[in-house]
Image (cartoon, rainbow, N blue to C red; front, top):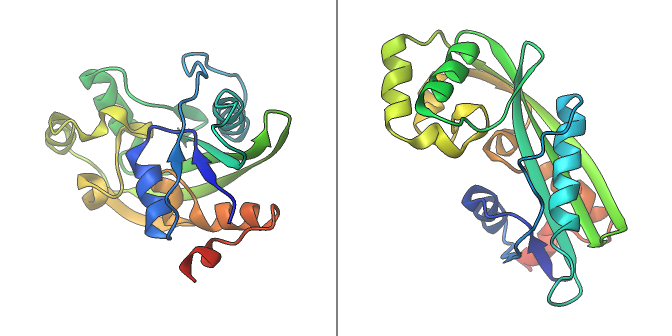
Length: 194
Protein backbone atom coordinates (compact mmCIF):
# COMPACT_ATOMS: atom_id res chain seq x y z
CA UNK A 1 0.00 0.00 0.00
CA UNK A 2 1.20 3.51 -0.78
CA UNK A 3 2.38 5.67 2.08
CA UNK A 4 -0.47 7.85 3.30
CA UNK A 5 0.20 11.31 4.71
CA UNK A 6 -2.23 13.46 6.64
CA UNK A 7 -1.88 17.23 6.27
CA UNK A 8 -3.70 17.89 9.51
CA UNK A 9 -2.85 18.35 13.17
CA UNK A 10 -6.38 17.22 14.09
CA UNK A 11 -6.22 14.34 16.55
CA UNK A 12 -9.78 13.42 15.53
CA UNK A 13 -8.84 12.84 11.88
CA UNK A 14 -5.80 10.83 12.92
CA UNK A 15 -7.96 8.71 15.27
CA UNK A 16 -10.56 8.09 12.55
CA UNK A 17 -7.91 6.82 10.14
CA UNK A 18 -6.42 4.60 12.85
CA UNK A 19 -9.92 3.28 13.58
CA UNK A 20 -10.02 1.78 10.08
CA UNK A 21 -6.46 0.45 10.17
CA UNK A 22 -4.49 3.32 8.63
CA UNK A 23 -1.57 4.89 10.46
CA UNK A 24 -0.87 8.08 8.52
CA UNK A 25 2.33 10.06 8.66
CA UNK A 26 1.44 13.54 9.87
CA UNK A 27 2.97 16.28 7.73
CA UNK A 28 2.80 20.00 8.47
CA UNK A 29 1.06 22.29 6.05
CA UNK A 30 1.99 25.95 5.62
CA UNK A 31 -1.51 26.81 4.38
CA UNK A 32 -2.83 30.00 5.98
CA UNK A 33 -6.24 29.09 7.39
CA UNK A 34 -6.82 32.70 8.44
CA UNK A 35 -7.73 33.52 4.85
CA UNK A 36 -11.50 33.03 4.67
CA UNK A 37 -12.49 32.03 1.19
CA UNK A 38 -15.81 33.25 -0.19
CA UNK A 39 -18.47 30.92 -1.46
CA UNK A 40 -20.75 28.18 -0.31
CA UNK A 41 -19.68 25.68 2.38
CA UNK A 42 -18.79 23.03 -0.20
CA UNK A 43 -16.47 25.42 -2.09
CA UNK A 44 -14.90 26.77 1.10
CA UNK A 45 -14.12 23.34 2.53
CA UNK A 46 -12.81 21.95 -0.76
CA UNK A 47 -10.59 25.02 -1.30
CA UNK A 48 -9.23 24.76 2.24
CA UNK A 49 -8.64 20.99 2.00
CA UNK A 50 -6.78 21.43 -1.28
CA UNK A 51 -4.77 24.33 0.13
CA UNK A 52 -3.71 22.23 3.12
CA UNK A 53 -2.57 19.38 0.88
CA UNK A 54 -0.75 21.54 -1.66
CA UNK A 55 1.12 23.37 1.10
CA UNK A 56 2.29 20.06 2.64
CA UNK A 57 4.54 19.30 -0.34
CA UNK A 58 7.25 18.23 -0.79
CA UNK A 59 6.52 15.01 1.10
CA UNK A 60 9.35 13.07 2.79
CA UNK A 61 8.80 10.17 0.36
CA UNK A 62 6.38 9.52 -2.50
CA UNK A 63 2.83 8.76 -1.41
CA UNK A 64 -0.65 10.21 -1.14
CA UNK A 65 -1.41 13.21 1.01
CA UNK A 66 -4.88 13.66 2.52
CA UNK A 67 -6.25 17.01 3.64
CA UNK A 68 -9.65 17.91 5.02
CA UNK A 69 -11.58 20.90 6.27
CA UNK A 70 -14.91 20.94 8.09
CA UNK A 71 -17.46 23.69 8.65
CA UNK A 72 -20.97 23.83 10.05
CA UNK A 73 -23.62 25.72 8.09
CA UNK A 74 -26.94 26.91 9.51
CA UNK A 75 -29.48 29.15 7.78
CA UNK A 76 -26.92 29.95 5.08
CA UNK A 77 -24.29 31.03 7.61
CA UNK A 78 -20.94 29.24 7.82
CA UNK A 79 -19.70 28.52 11.33
CA UNK A 80 -16.00 27.72 11.57
CA UNK A 81 -14.18 27.46 14.93
CA UNK A 82 -15.19 29.85 17.72
CA UNK A 83 -12.83 32.69 18.60
CA UNK A 84 -13.93 33.14 22.21
CA UNK A 85 -16.20 31.80 24.96
CA UNK A 86 -18.97 34.20 23.93
CA UNK A 87 -18.54 33.36 20.24
CA UNK A 88 -18.97 29.65 21.06
CA UNK A 89 -22.15 30.49 23.01
CA UNK A 90 -23.49 32.47 20.03
CA UNK A 91 -22.85 29.54 17.70
CA UNK A 92 -24.64 27.09 19.97
CA UNK A 93 -27.63 29.45 20.22
CA UNK A 94 -27.76 29.42 16.40
CA UNK A 95 -27.77 25.61 16.38
CA UNK A 96 -30.31 25.22 19.18
CA UNK A 97 -33.49 23.46 18.04
CA UNK A 98 -32.64 23.48 14.34
CA UNK A 99 -31.17 21.25 11.68
CA UNK A 100 -27.78 22.24 10.33
CA UNK A 101 -25.29 20.85 7.85
CA UNK A 102 -21.77 19.64 8.53
CA UNK A 103 -19.67 19.92 5.38
CA UNK A 104 -16.21 18.42 4.97
CA UNK A 105 -14.02 18.95 1.94
CA UNK A 106 -11.42 16.25 1.27
CA UNK A 107 -8.39 16.50 -0.99
CA UNK A 108 -6.02 13.71 -1.96
CA UNK A 109 -2.86 14.45 -3.94
CA UNK A 110 0.39 12.83 -4.99
CA UNK A 111 1.79 16.19 -6.12
CA UNK A 112 0.63 19.81 -5.80
CA UNK A 113 -0.82 19.68 -9.32
CA UNK A 114 -2.26 16.13 -9.35
CA UNK A 115 -5.19 15.86 -6.97
CA UNK A 116 -8.79 14.86 -6.38
CA UNK A 117 -11.18 17.00 -4.30
CA UNK A 118 -14.69 16.10 -3.11
CA UNK A 119 -17.00 16.90 -0.21
CA UNK A 120 -19.51 15.26 2.10
CA UNK A 121 -22.62 16.76 3.74
CA UNK A 122 -24.33 15.42 6.87
CA UNK A 123 -27.47 16.89 8.40
CA UNK A 124 -27.59 17.14 12.21
CA UNK A 125 -30.51 18.28 14.35
CA UNK A 126 -30.01 19.69 17.84
CA UNK A 127 -32.65 19.69 20.55
CA UNK A 128 -33.59 23.04 22.08
CA UNK A 129 -30.73 24.15 24.32
CA UNK A 130 -31.14 26.24 27.44
CA UNK A 131 -28.71 29.01 28.35
CA UNK A 132 -27.56 26.79 31.21
CA UNK A 133 -26.85 23.93 28.76
CA UNK A 134 -24.83 26.24 26.55
CA UNK A 135 -22.84 27.83 29.38
CA UNK A 136 -22.10 24.46 30.96
CA UNK A 137 -20.89 22.99 27.69
CA UNK A 138 -18.73 25.94 26.67
CA UNK A 139 -17.18 26.02 30.16
CA UNK A 140 -15.80 22.50 29.53
CA UNK A 141 -13.53 23.98 26.83
CA UNK A 142 -14.51 21.21 24.41
CA UNK A 143 -16.09 23.46 21.75
CA UNK A 144 -13.16 25.85 21.38
CA UNK A 145 -11.31 24.09 18.54
CA UNK A 146 -14.35 22.58 16.83
CA UNK A 147 -16.25 23.74 13.76
CA UNK A 148 -19.67 24.92 14.90
CA UNK A 149 -18.45 24.90 18.53
CA UNK A 150 -19.30 21.29 19.29
CA UNK A 151 -17.96 17.74 19.20
CA UNK A 152 -20.57 15.11 18.41
CA UNK A 153 -18.20 12.42 19.70
CA UNK A 154 -17.87 14.28 23.00
CA UNK A 155 -20.19 15.85 25.53
CA UNK A 156 -22.34 17.50 22.85
CA UNK A 157 -23.69 14.05 21.94
CA UNK A 158 -26.52 14.76 24.42
CA UNK A 159 -27.63 17.73 22.27
CA UNK A 160 -28.16 15.69 19.09
CA UNK A 161 -31.74 14.62 18.30
CA UNK A 162 -31.00 13.17 14.90
CA UNK A 163 -28.45 12.75 12.16
CA UNK A 164 -28.86 12.04 8.45
CA UNK A 165 -25.72 10.99 6.64
CA UNK A 166 -22.17 10.05 7.53
CA UNK A 167 -21.39 10.15 11.27
CA UNK A 168 -17.60 10.26 10.83
CA UNK A 169 -18.07 13.35 8.65
CA UNK A 170 -19.40 15.21 11.70
CA UNK A 171 -16.32 14.11 13.64
CA UNK A 172 -14.12 15.53 10.88
CA UNK A 173 -13.38 12.96 8.17
CA UNK A 174 -16.03 11.08 6.16
CA UNK A 175 -14.45 7.64 5.98
CA UNK A 176 -16.84 6.15 3.41
CA UNK A 177 -16.22 9.08 1.02
CA UNK A 178 -12.47 8.86 1.66
CA UNK A 179 -12.46 5.16 0.77
CA UNK A 180 -14.33 5.86 -2.49
CA UNK A 181 -11.80 8.57 -3.32
CA UNK A 182 -8.84 6.30 -2.50
CA UNK A 183 -10.38 3.64 -4.76
CA UNK A 184 -9.92 6.12 -7.63
CA UNK A 185 -6.18 6.04 -6.81
CA UNK A 186 -6.24 2.23 -6.87
CA UNK A 187 -6.35 1.85 -3.06
CA UNK A 188 -8.94 0.39 -0.74
CA UNK A 189 -8.83 0.91 3.03
CA UNK A 190 -9.76 -2.73 3.56
CA UNK A 191 -6.41 -3.75 2.08
CA UNK A 192 -4.77 -2.56 5.32
CA UNK A 193 -6.73 -5.22 7.21
CA UNK A 194 -5.02 -8.14 5.45
